Length: 438
Image (tube, rainbow, N blue to C red; front, side, top):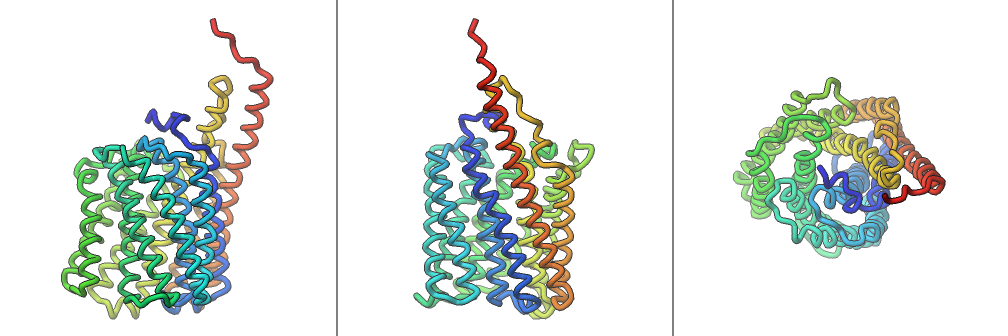
């Protein structure tokens, strides 16, 4: 806890904020793409528009939030100080943002040059981040479960990105690979080996601390991360070797692990000491419920693959995972991380002589409440659009634009709040002489 309050270990606020402010822009682009594509986007998960929208969320929104959070979490939670964090953040952001846009353009138009440039930009951006984070974590012991989880999540990010680069170059025509098989492996590493492992590692700290729940049990902290890594690696090998029965068993094991994490988090939330849930807890609860629903659909797809395809289960699964689970939990984390960072940096700017405003003042509660309900409406309409695209695609697109725009508005309000109060603190500090020692 003390590390969280140490300005010496916290990076400059501009380092994570550039990622946080970029993420909702990509969500807005996803809404515009859905509006422009119309019901045809839901014809199949393999349509160019569906693939482009998926990567607007995963590479545009999710990766921005996750890397921005890691730049803050690594020093203050793991004690892993990234050297020159602002320079690293600037370089990584400058590669990832255009790389994501190029990838979307390449997927929409099948343009080889766009795909090639996207592979280079995203590959270099993630590599730069992994090099900086790996160097920072190199000397940190892995005895703590959160630190182990962070290290394994970064490994998952590396594998996910490597597979993505190979797929982008294969679509470019540089070489031939089994696209469907490799895409399935890429998806599993991205959603489980990277995103779920990182989320679980962060949850060990933030759920008990900010949501006032009991701690995760020791057995979960000891076994979850290695179990996920072993199972997803074993499943990937079985997929490559076309071992259907072992692959099905290992896939069921992955679903079980994600189910345990989601169900355990919901169980801990029920024992929260808070009299009333705040929006962060609502977002986490929504995310875990969607994760459980997605696991149920995945199990149905394993047991009844033909029926699952005819019932649009892959599209429902995609909405539940991308928007219902990952975007929900990311939004909830932003509403906790951003006000805390604003308070922390204002508190340190005051030097103990000028108190920072309360964290609850950074973003108005009514604005967070409104954005949560807009997000909930967008999720409901997106699920309906996956089943009845002719009726619900355009309302879903409008709802996604409203929810994403509202999130951006709230984050910009927090940024303006920080700048306003930072200027006030600077002015007061100049007008108030420092107390003389003795």
